[in-house]
Image 1 (cartoon, one colour):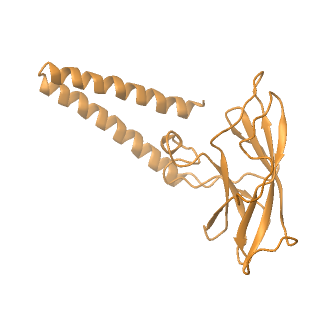
Image 2 (cartoon, one colour):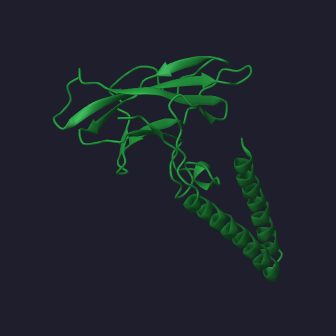
Image 3 (cartoon, rainbow, N blue to C red):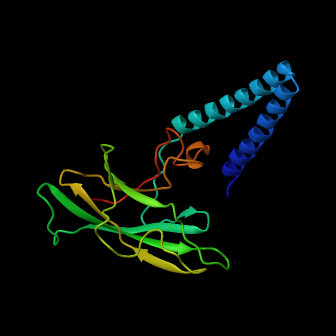
Length: 198
């Protein structure tokens, strides 16, 4: 957990305590105190959301180089290459792209996996394509022993006119990533990408 995630969890905890205080005040019929505490909660969250959105709008898109590690807690993902797969026939107007990803477990002593990680391709026009589930192999969510590594090769079906392809790792837009200031998955943030040279 990094500092920005810690800040969000502290704010969430403070909100729970504040909501309990509001409830107690209402039970005691101290309506003015309950209203005051409720308005404090709303004001702090409004300030937090303003900082979150300002951060998302002002930060440029982060571009990660081929071979460079991206860390998600103790699990690490690095795109090491990509290639078209002309030997496999697909429907007219489409092509298959295989991306090679090195997965590493940097935990000191325990077996780990990132159950929520997924990846998708984007192009310069902003179009997105999810991984083809029909192709089997080592998944990005593979469980690795401490210090272990593996190679995953997700395959994507994209239109022939797709150029400037990049791979994006994500945990989705849900809690907590969507509300973490400066996170690639946060609201309105430009996604961190690895351009593949295709």
